[in-house]
Image 1 (cartoon, rainbow, N blue to C red):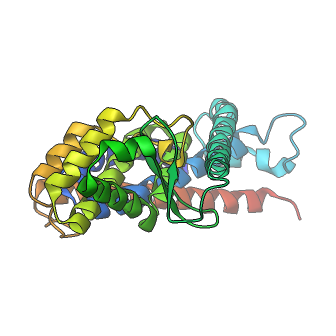
Image 2: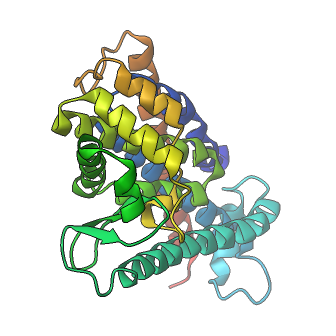
Amino acid sequence: MGVFVLLPLVLPLTAWPIARLATQHLHPRTATSLLSVMAAVMALCSTLCVGLLMVVGTAQLPGNPLPDGWSDPEVRESVPHDDIVGKAAIPVLLAIVLGCGRTLLRHRRVRRKAHAALTGLRDTSVAVLPDDEPYAYALPAGPRDRIVVTTAMLACLNSRERRALFAHERAHLTARHHRHLLIAQLAAQANPFLLPLRTAVSYVTERWADEEAAQSVGSRRAVARAIGKAALVSRGTPAPTLAALAAPGPLPRRVAALLAPPPPARTWPPLFTTVGLALWSAATGAALSAMFSANSAVTLLLLLHAATPL
């Protein structure tokens, strides 16, 4: 394996250009799918890399339950500076597991509390809460998908802006944006180099919902006014919601995008363009990360199998 086992840890850096360019030049629907898949692949590869480093580097420690053959010099030589790297991988892997577990528990706890807050209300697709604080959010899963909005928020919007707000939240539910956000959150927990992808996924999911709302209402300007007014009067929900797992992105960029022409529906730009080259570079980085991780895993398994006595 050699130094190649370390590459999946740093190859997520190749995703930074696409995280920037995809939000600017790709349709939000395409950008959301591309960035969330890349985040998941690179996070899995880097986590596998940390696990391999820990196994090889700690097999020779006294009291380790691993087979004695796994501490043979031939196995340890497969990882550079195995004693130092292997010991360092233990707290890193522990931090990854704890961070991802905390994110999943928070996601479950928030979902449960959000549904509990609607107890006693009519089982309709739109739940109106009698609250003086203006806010609205999409609540997926549970018995049924619902849009939660307060009476104060409805009072701040006219009829067309309400339609735009409902269309925006309904787009979140239809496209299951909470899954993309959760994947990006878990990926950033697994590798800090993927934090720009988490921010990008958060932004493009909001842009995707904006575009769907504009198409549903028939006016991009009306949606821009609705989200601008909602953001100005809203101070956030009294408790974290599923949408709060990631920030919704800079509002001025969203409004400016809605006041501009619709983004092209083309899913992939031509290769010999700046955006096309960035996309192919990021895709190549993800493929290399997966390939190096798989190669390291297979090589390590063969070495460990050969070193394990029958």
